[in-house]
Length: 309
Image (cartoon, rainbow, N blue to C red; front, side):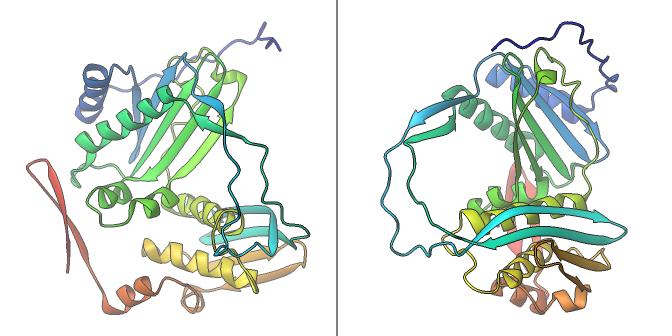
């Protein structure tokens, strides 16, 4: 199907400020070492990386149906809707959950996956980040990577807290845990087509509470739809456990209340930070909080090491 773009004038891209030394170093490494013409911008403490390409990023592949895992518990609930936000010093989570009517573990033998070219770009970008941004003295808190097929108008976007990546790089946290902390989005739009300089991106400074609200939503969605241990009884408690654990991972306490709204049962709850402490399944995090464990990341001679105290 042809995409009609006649009469659609593109807005002028906002002027880019003079690149910092970090931007110059990162862009030069991408060009020289990996042949990638990336464009970077810094908004506050957020480092934006735009990777335009005219080659396909996604493809379909056949897969062999696998038998159900006998150790995996079947899901008892369907999560129909989940939304999270932060405003007026409070987290707000709204959701719709129903009992699962029928479990269907079959598939049609087709999966969507990244192409080899996409996987190479992804690995090269994260290698460049490793080689230029592990120093904790770098004044960057968040990184956004947007890899965009400007021919078909498809984009994969990743937002993560740089300190999480530093810790994962030195095994301070498991890499599987790091992937749960990354906000991953796949989008499509005619606005992406022909956009060689990333003018469709917002280039905003990511705020920690907004990042946490979205991460919590992702974790709740994963718990209901992909986890080997989906909620079996009190799903509302499972949701509160995820909220408490996620905020605990970041020691985030700059909020007054957490609001939950079950739009199907019309049950609304409000928790103070002290009341939220009663929830959470991560026992190691609770012990760490009780014992006041402190973690230092030391950067010397281009190598990062982690030290507990």
